[in-house]
Image (spheres, rainbow, N blue to C red):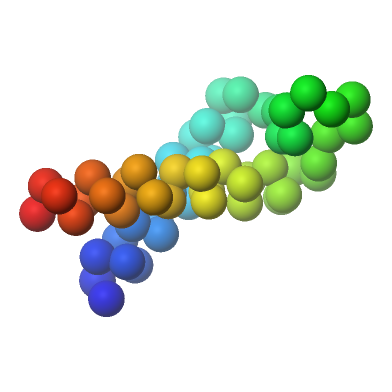
Length: 59
């Protein structure tokens, strides 16, 4: 349970950093972009699996 909570918190932290650096890029290839909160959630979901996998295999 702690591993899941840690990976969710880290993905939220890194998605915020990514969003501040990259901006509103989602959805890719479309003229009209999503609002900031949806971009932040998208980045968090994209980063969740790699962060969880990294923590799981390292520990």
